[in-house]
Amino acid sequence: MTADIALDIQRVSRRFGETVALDEVTLQVARGEFLTLLGPSGSGKTTLLRLIVGFDVPTGGSILLGGRDISRLTPADRSAGMVFQNYALFPHMTVADNVAYGLKLRKWPKERRRERVAEMLELVQLGGYQDRYPRQLSGGQQQRVALARALAYDPEIILMDEPLGALDRALRIEMEAVIRSIHRKLRATMIYVTHDQQEALALSDRIAIMRHGRLVDVGTPERLYEDPGSTFVASFFANANLVDAQLLERRGDGRARVRAVGSEFECRTSGPVLGRPKLALRRRSFRLAEPDGPSIPIRGRVAETLLFGDERQIVLDVPDAGRVVALMEARTSAVLGVGDDVQLHVPRDETVVVGEADPDQGA
Amino acid sequence: MPDTPTTTRTPAERRRHLSDLATRAVGGVVVTAAAVFLLAPALLTIVLSFSGDDRFNWPPESWGLRQYETLLESTDWLDAIWLSIRIALPVALLSALIAVPAVIAISRSRLPGRALLQAAGVVALIIPVSAFAVAVYGVFVQLKLIGTYVGLVLANTVLAFPLALVVTAAAMSRVPVELELAAMTAGAGRARAWAGITLRLLAPAILAGCVLSFITSFDEAVLINFLGGSGQVTLPKAIFDSVRFGVDPVITAIATLLMVATSLLMLIALRLRRSGR
Image (tube, rainbow over all chains, first blue to last red; front, side, top):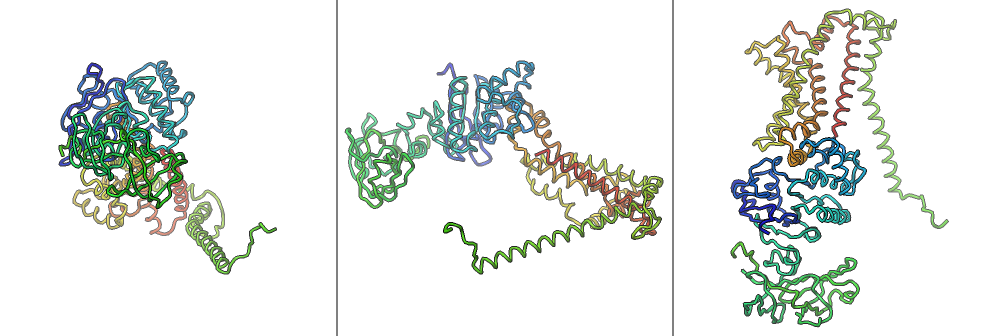
């Protein structure tokens, strides 16, 4: 991967007086990779994006794009394309003029410009919309024009700041498909900022999880799901329930003997398990019947059930563990009524023990 | 017909319905009366301007364009109109030149005390003109600006530019900063992004601000009495003077022309602001 690094972020910090918005973030993005910066608001993800695109200058560290240090260049000199949450289309220009904006600045001849605009609009499935004005388009269409405008001059990197944040759910899913297909076709390096983990899952090759201005973890969606490394990743990214666990015996092979939810068993650990250990129970891991493999019994009283369509959310009061939320198949879980004392089962290989502290915060 | 809804109302419902009707009727009367009160003097003036008499008569004994002919033959009136225009034009220009950088500073910079700057900008809209005029008079005496053209332009600018500021600031709030940032990432320099996108989008509002400042200055009747000295006679001053020495019916013609011109300019300003949206 070293030869093919598009973006190399080296110990980049951004301080505003006493506040540290970004604390020595180091991150490499491979050429053609789709990387998502995921984190709650105030985690520093947008600050990092602004530093990459050049709306702000880091107070420490450097940013290399294609091997060139760009951290102090103006946005115009960086060869980046940007897509904003509010589309930021030029309202006084037609769709074609919007898309051609970067090409005009690069002095492309008119004929080539026209061809490129048509090609880009075809790519975002807006062929024939050249002469419309932004106000005549829906939100989803406007965002596709913005994407075409950012892609047209073939920048080295495409940056997107919560581009689907202003769209409704159905449109978001449609746009995710559009973005995925464009990334597949162009193999452009893309950095995407969001606080929505579903969006991150649907789009990303890798996800960088941020919190309090630091990079908590970077990995493929599968890896972050299976091996979250910390309670923050387990709960924020995988939506897992975290219940108190007691480490009885740690093994060298990444497994440990633990006591939790009223039983004793052996299961995987993830990360260094700093601070208080917690057992992560993912919402979709709960079963009504005991599975074939080894499993953990969860006994509790049903506090609430809520039908989500194909799935049903069951809130369980578990002694010594507190409230646990499970998502189960709607039809079979219909037998669970509020107030019932029930026993559910979680396959042991779907659970993991994590430490409460972030590994990089040193407990 | 068991399914048709019954129309019988409870007494409370009937009371509410009646009071609803009454409120609407009273509202209609008030609005009509207000419109008549506002428009009647204007309409009366327009009608009178077509009187053929050489003094005020109601109803006029004859009709004609006599007032307009007198106006066009009188160099005093034409000089006054010309001076008002010569003052209002630079006032409009200066207002825009002050308002645009002020709006940038207020809405796009991290300047400390921006809110204060904005409040200070519109303070001339709030303080009474006569109080302002007395203060300016004191300063202008010191600077020997009383009765000078430059002095009148400066004083009128202070009075008129807040309008340009307000209109431009309103337009600026509808231009997201991301537009400029988008232009810059696409390869535009800061100046080009600013001029080609933000300034371009503000242009209608800036023009509207100019028109409003022009009207404010052109119509200014208080400052001129303090600062005009004896030499500078603008149109509003000339109207005052003519009324003081007996009523000349020619002012109905002037008032009519003023109303028409102002309405047209206002219409232009309104159009410009709409097109900027």
